[in-house]
Image (cartoon, rainbow, N blue to C red):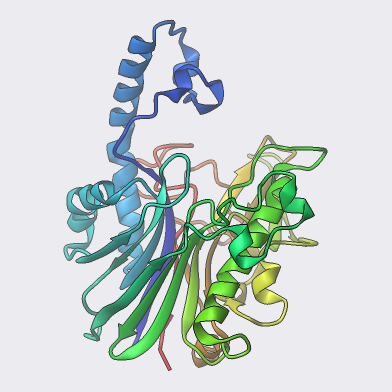
Length: 369
């Protein structure tokens, strides 16, 4: 019996328009910035036209990436609401895969933009094993005080009664062909702007570290501290942090060098330092673990993994030797690929957009013990 599990940040699957860019330049699309728009009414009309014109190609590519993942259970990030998810599945995904995801789960979380995590599940795995939901729990309301996680670093940007998860940790208790499987779906705090001499990643690291500690606490409360290693669980999502990166050195059109670098610290060390869970993407070669390309000019560009499937020790050991897949066909042409990793992009992919997402789906085929 096998289960196809995937995670994918589809980026801004919204049912509403964001007009805040009229007053906040940081929220304004770069196309609109090319024009002088003095009226808020005109701005709203232009923003509506821009979004509608660009959405169809983007969502076709998003659906193609999901179809290529061919997952039985799909963990998604940046979903506006259930209406958006249903419209996307009916209008795009169903046309790609021909067999929709009948089971859909989304709980409103804490993100100020309203983007949430969600889970799509088939009724059965590809080999006919029933997928059943026994229980679902949101942990969006959990505070630092609840888990006694507040510290001096967090006090610089948070209060003790603030919610830990900036989106949510959605916990699903499942049976796959009668076998228990627990799933934790997250979208950790994004890397913000530089602050107090720290770059955006370092300045927000304490928040993501607290989120990782909270996920671990939830799992330990579920199974008992010291008794988690023998259980079947997975932690999936966009964690907005990485333990390693691949520096891209050189300019496009020249011979770029790709150098692997380990990070001195990461919020994700909470999962890995004592073997609590395994990041299965690390089973791939060091230059071939990335799920996102980041660039701010030729002097700052790297490939890194932001999208994860972490497995419990028992589940990882039961699937020893298996490699996860990373689907990169929806990447825009600006993404620099190391030699030998090039893929055929989806039709009508652009230099920067349209694209499936800046993120790549990560997929793992699992046997449950």
